[in-house]
Image (cartoon, rainbow, N blue to C red; front, top):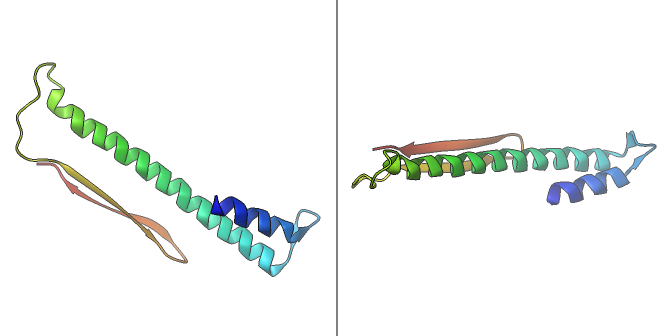
Length: 95
């Protein structure tokens, strides 16, 4: 929602649809960065959810009772965002 708010504020500083003040252009750039972060975060979240589903399904995949396991798989996702870049750190283990 912050991206939409910044974009709207930036567009309000523009005239004739393409001539923007420096402040308006900066708000639009900020909105684009925030939108990119939101998109990447959503994609990574969906991927993590899908991976979790697969890891939960694996012990049941033979159609019978769940396999007895004493070790648990783990998946860790951490966002890494600063003023100039967007990224994610992934880690985990499958026993």
